[in-house]
Length: 320
Image 1 (spheres, rainbow, N blue to C red):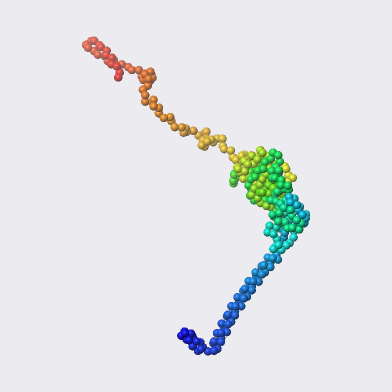
Image 2: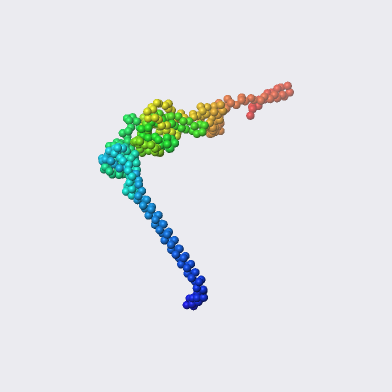
């Protein structure tokens, strides 16, 4: 109580003019803060409202069926039409271009006036009637798949039914060698797609290419895949002019005939690395008598003359 009493006493001593100015200032600050808060909330609400309106009023291109398309039928371009619809009414997997549906096979029947969605279609490359992939191979031919990248695969412009030459490359720098190993080969699949996209105007890079080759060429191609880097050379579809090909092993430099195993050159003296045979246990045994006498020099006895007056005697002393 004493604190409040002292505070009121101090305020009562302040001139009325100063108190009025202080009250007006406090009121102005509070009013400004409240107004700023309301204005900020209004701007935030307006921005959210505009975003929602833009979302629900946005248009997106979808594909409509102009006629009934039965299940298992290939969709023709004349049966499709592109229209603009509100984004809120567009299915999540709706196709946005008629080129994505043209030539595809329906998985379910599509009614006229319905939006064509991805789930209505068979996987890309599936032929009408469920034709299997191996039906694309001619008798005696084999399908071989190998990896490519954006450079070796002609930037994705290779499609099923394209004709290509396959070039093997080995070495690096000045020792780089590149030669065709197969000529005029038919591409039957790119990635997992084995049907050409009608009217396509853009490339679709893939990580693998599948070609149809004879049984003999399949072995040659697999050898090239394992031993070299393969590059594809795209042909005109009407150009079937053969190109001279080689086996990939011919691209590797043969070893010099003068150098054999271990780097030995015939002009250099060969040093035998075989150790000498160990001493035989019979080396210390005495030789037979016949061999000993044949090898040793003949023994000679010593003769000594002994004189006794005029008489001479000869003494024979054997050699030790």
